[in-house]
Length: 89
Image 1: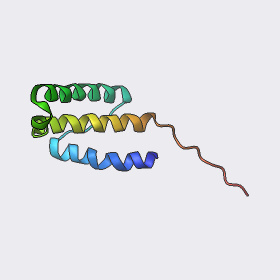
Image 2 (image 1 turned 30 degrees about the vertical axis):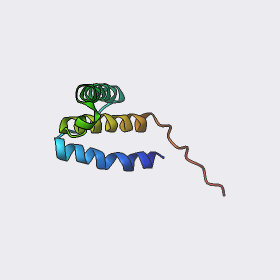
Image 3 (image 1 turned 120 degrees about the vertical axis):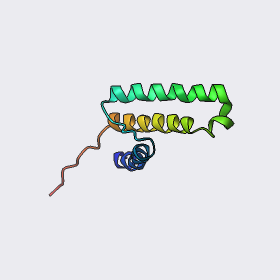
Image 4 (image 1 turned 180 degrees about the vertical axis):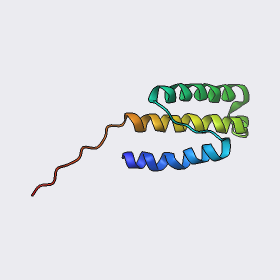
C-alpha cells in the first residue's frame, strides 16, 4: 500500500514543480499547515465563485492540487509500515 501511495504522489509532485514551480516537502507538521492553508483558499474560491466558476480558475486548481498532494503525503508519512517477514528454512 505504501508503494501505491508513492506511485500516486510522485507524478503529482512533479506536475506541481513543473507547472507552479512549487516543491512540496518537509515534516508532517509543515505539510499539515500547507494543507490547511490551501484547503481554506479552495473553500474561499468555492464560496465566492461557486463550483462552476471556481473550476475555471487556475488559482482554484492550484489550491486543490496542493491541498490534495499535502494530504497524500501526510497519509504516506503516518501510514503503518509493512512488517518484514522472516523467511522460514
